[in-house]
Image 1 (cartoon, rainbow, N blue to C red):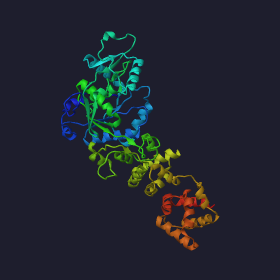
Image 2 (image 1 turned 120 degrees about the vertical axis):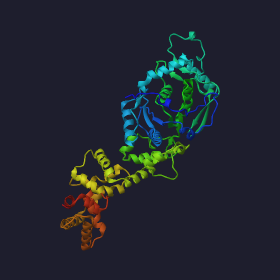
Image 3 (image 1 turned 180 degrees about the vertical axis):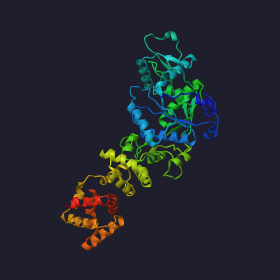
Length: 503
């Protein structure tokens, strides 16, 4: 739903300065002007043409942290003006991904497509004020301009053909676009909080289109109008938008609006320094959830992709909010590394309280095996979880390691486990089951004492009994400590499984 958009920034003292055209430049720094802003307002503005990818998730995180650090607002705008490519599925994936990461936005989401009338009104205002004009160039004429520019070794840009022509020359059969009358001389400087001052020659930035020939607004116009109306004080986004910032500054200047404070974050590369691709980890956030990563570990990892706080690597959400500043964002691209993410997630798994992990493990079990453990299996899982989480780096691995707790009897041992359950081993298991059954109490210590006494009695090595015992109880050759397995399964289930395999 569309929230009511008032010009919140009109209550703010002007803290945003632009250097557009030949405007004079003033000494300016973020910290000097932060005190003049009554409330920080950031936004995340994804286009719903695909999933919420890693770069977008990091952008959302940085905006969220900056707003929370300053007790400000973090807004969400769905930029769905590309109706042909925008899908509800993508919108749902974005909202779901943000929810999983714990990045709650303030107020209701703004859907840009519902604001097209407002965008068109601003374009009409610029036309009336002589700051925009109708352009009747045909596709063929635009192609000729591009070809001529390439042949002359010049930047490919619109040459201003209709900028100052008499409207009486307008053809009747060609629907026009509306173009901005951008500055043609001087420079535009974007005072960026990450990259520093970036200056563009205005003769390299052409008269951008505000309204298409069908009357729909372009991305450039919509973003400026929406950021203004939503009172956005800080635009934190990828550095692929840096040139867009210069173009958008021309629209702000034409309208007499203050520029927001810009912070353009360098891109994320693969570990080999190449553009991030699916093989590097350019997946939807939902894929990382399905792979068993914890949201708090993912937040920590995304935070460290391009932001630092001394030598700190493990950073809680509370610490991140307290410490986050734009000054600590690096100027160089970050590199995505699955091994580091896996290691970090393992640390969070080991530090997690079992009661907080339990619902996530159960959900992962249901996702993998299509079943929900019954009450008895849940009790076993609760008991075994402290040991299981020490040996796993993600929830999927933990759920797979926990499968023995709720597997149906008789277990079907895997290939390696089956080889251990030979005739001699099964005979030992039958005798051991009889001795274990006689125990008055069922604890890790009592079961260990019983098994060691059995090994001594039979003059066997520990492995000759422990390995088949693990295979019979879990169906695998890898598990938590065998005495912990016995306790987590319980006396009745443990004895039943041993006798199943010994029969």
